[in-house]
Length: 146
Image (cartoon, rainbow, N blue to C red; front, side, top):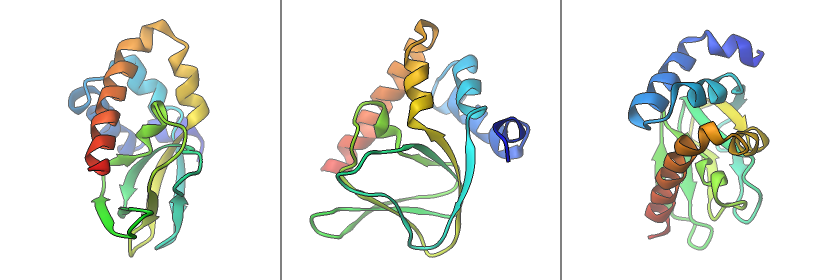
């Protein structure tokens, strides 16, 4: 599926509303993210972000669950479900501190690669949206670190 096809899907409408209302991001920035989403399906219990490795980008959860584990204790820290996202730390941090695994069922994710986010950082018109997204990502990061 090409990014243009995702733009017209029901999922993109959900994420567009979320990025604009819940996250307070501009319409233009939201559309830039949505048009670059790439669908991916992952099998149960597969690890797609590993501690101490590069975070590849932001993953929006369309179906299924993502579980986040501590590398030190192996303890489950949090679960994220449908219409949530992970990997937003890639905005301010290159490597992951935790392990991200798919839950007990197959998960459908929409992936925005890190290079797309870095490209968006170059545009002055997106600085307010990126600043807000960074603040929210830092808040979520601190929550996991406690």
